[in-house]
Every structure is written in C-alpha cells, then in structure tokens.
Image 1 (cartoon, rainbow, N blue to C red):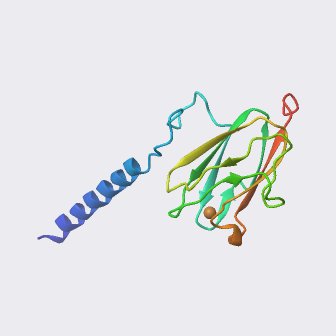
Image 2: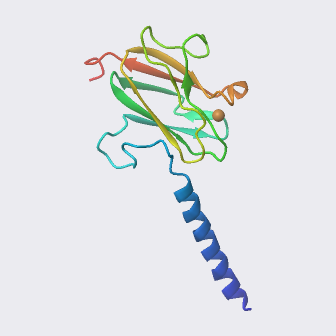
Image 3: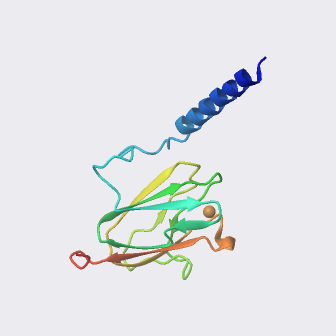
Length: 144
Ligand SMILES: [Cu+2]
C-alpha cells in the first residue's frame, strides 16, 4: 500500500469519527431552540472547560434573559445553583434554583433568570477545583 494512500485513508477515518462525535453529542433533553441560530437566542453563552472553569466566569445580563451553558470539555460538568448551599451557591430571594445535571461534551443547558440580583453557581463535580461562576442579573430597564 502506498504511503500516500494510507495517509488519505487516515484522514477519512478522522472525518468519520468527528461526524460521529457530533451526532452523538445532541442532548436528548433539548426540545426547544435546538441549534445555534437565533430565535430564542441566549443573552450569553458560558462555556465549560476541562481546566475547571466557566468562561466567562462572571457575567451581567438583564432580567428575563436566557443563559446557556455549553460543555466544551471532554469530561462532564454541571452548572448548579441550589438554595441552601450558601455561600458557594447563592440565589436572590425568590429566584428559581437550577441544576443542569451532568452535561456531557457538547451538551447544553438553558436557564432564564427572571429575578434581579447576584447568582453564584458551581460545577458539582469540580468544586474542589474551584469551578465556580457568577451572574449578575440587572433589573429590567437598568441594563440599557
Ligand atoms: Cu466541572
């Protein structure tokens, strides 16, 4: 077998694997706004990485905006803000808590934050690595 042919076959395998990985990463729970195209667009997309960080780690959004977390790492992560676990997890009074559950590579989780105030959330798997994030929700009308 000629070396050049071997090389091109190798490329085909890589492409095939990449395609397979993409199709497997479709989150089963995603029933609305299933793609990145606009419509019900998220106000901010926060990516999750295997160096144990949320990017950006802190964000400001107007009340009622949609936040979307996407796992861009190879290992699972969560985005979690539950009542009763202060100060690691913190919610404004009356705000809805959330827990994405395990997000595998490429999976997304969305949350609409209606209540103004400061939110502290964590990755439950990597709290020891200080994988935490913050979101400031500004009262409607104050964010421009
Ligand atoms: Cu994590």
